[in-house]
Image (tube, rainbow, N blue to C red; front, side, top):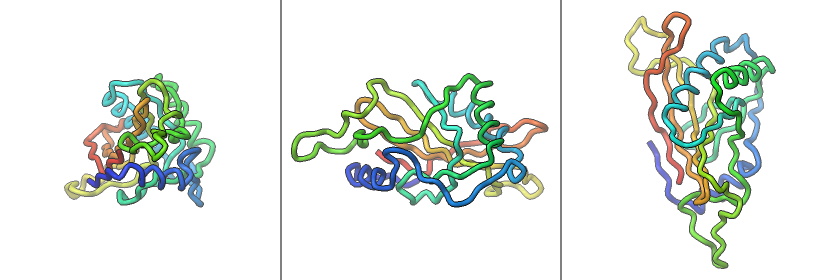
Length: 196
């Protein structure tokens, strides 16, 4: 897991990359036929994310690209068939989890960002209440440490942002799930990157 504490630099990188308003879009598209298990894997991961946070949570249904954990910026969006997005929104509605947007609010810097020379803390755009917002990549095959013959595992990348009056921090996790009949069961989650 990589940890970065250079909050001012991190925030500048995130804002320069367009994360302050919205996350950039990847140049390729995915349709439902190419990833038929997406909504079931998505729902399984949403349940675990919901159980792991003790503050209000919203989930951005728009899939993110799977990126290397060395990338400091939030990952790009993947353009998907409308059916993929509709299935993800349906899963959120069925689970009772609100939909959100995984974007850093304007003028809301990282928790550890120091005030600038004028004393501005760069936190005036932060929400008044602490909340969590997560985005979930499309599932991909997972084979690390899986015994031969047990190949029905999937992994997703999940950046989880906690944002409140003191700023934001982001922990990116890799979630692994396995197929059990028609269900997808949680196996593990591992942090891959912490940004404070």
